[in-house]
Length: 322
Image 1: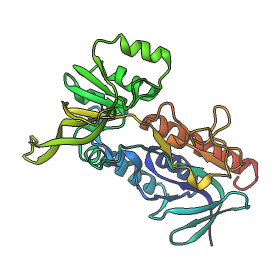
Image 2: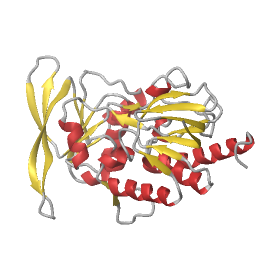
Image 3: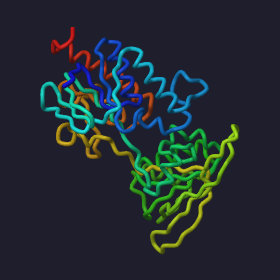
């Protein structure tokens, strides 16, 4: 088995930043890319809120820059997916789809995945810049002056709908029931917002698109309307919108660690106080896998820095590195 002082599971801003700090500390980290190398930003289009890029940068390009940066400092990256993690052993044992490894410390940066509606087109259009998103703070600016829709009925949906009224001309909130699950304070605020229109007892049956030519002469599919189904009488209707935000929740990628690490009621890893430490000494968590509040590239990167520093200090305190 190949042994490493630090193994990082997952990439994205958290994993790559952890690798950057760990490699510059001469810890020679090993990074497993997993099933989605680069994380969620690889399926976004333009990123305008990451510091240092005044004209914005495409998500895949930002991730490629981060990848090349960590390689420059000696990070080892393997295109493998961790299938099993034994965190009760010392050193820790990690089995991938190709080999088996041991590690003195582990940084978990497996992220979280947005829940989609299961109709195919929503996720597809989010990846191609077709007007569908799962992050209002990431993409709301692109819908300035446009009529859009938000799907969901919990706190996240109401928060996103309210936030989007800063940009959109009208926000249609689509919910499959006749009442919201969100907190009363959020409901009251949304109901008083003249830009928010509620569509009760409705589900999205289909996303209707049209072909649009970009300034570069390319043809892309853009959302033009939603086909809605009434959950009471089964009738269908069409709602014209130029954007769709799916706010039915995120799912942390923590299946590997069930029964090994403490999680909250929704599956996010718990860390100790203002640190990246988990309940197992030598195991650290960063990024969206432990953050259900902010879920931003910059906060993920910051927590990746914290995880690398915490790991370095733990290794030194236990005499594994000087």
